Length: 83
Figure 1 (tube, one colour):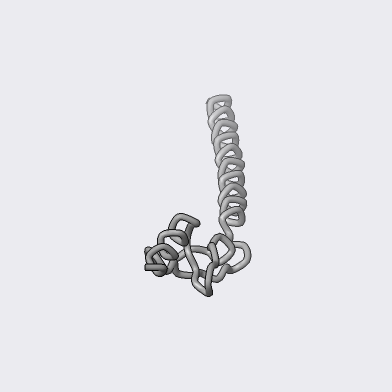
Figure 2 (tube, one colour):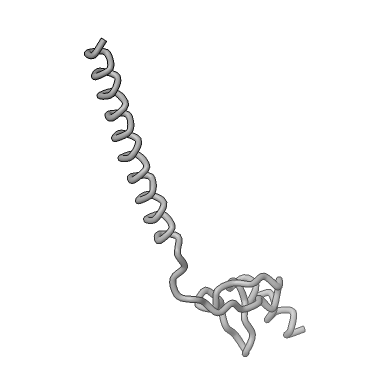
């Protein structure tokens, strides 16, 4: 009888220890993934003159004081304005 109780206590301690380790690893994973997703520098957004889409300023194409999302939209706007 005593041997069975001792074995049961050992199993309970092992299960408790394993769960504690899993929770600690899970918590570390949540913290690291949250910091990986943390935004870097805030970027200014600009609007394409041709289609109206908003995009980061550093990705935009500039021409004649206007902002475009691509060279194709810049060219289309320039052709339309020349008419």
